[in-house]
Image (cartoon, rainbow, N blue to C red; front, top):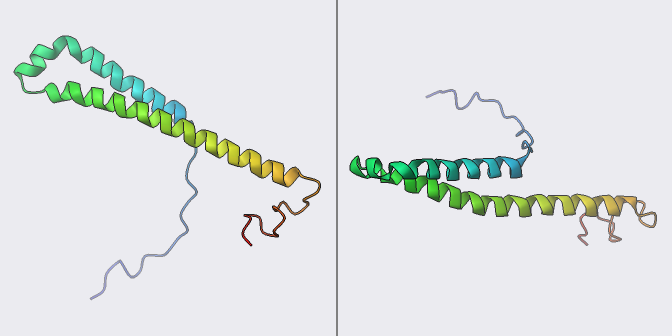
Length: 109
């Protein structure tokens, strides 16, 4: 039994794309809240047709978006701190190899 599974070549995974993550999550959160507010005047119609879950889904999306904003802002700050720490280690004249003194760049013994 032969198939295409055996002939698939292996490739290295590409680097992840980094973009304006905080702005993207913030924009999406605003859209979810805007959709919630735009649907509120039509609550009666949604209720009559059994679609009130549309309204509550938008509210849940906005709420989860707030959690997402908090998370990606913390992630972005951590990435910037790590980059600044790495730059400080590499700029230290007493440490020409860019290590922390243990001989290894990551500090392991």
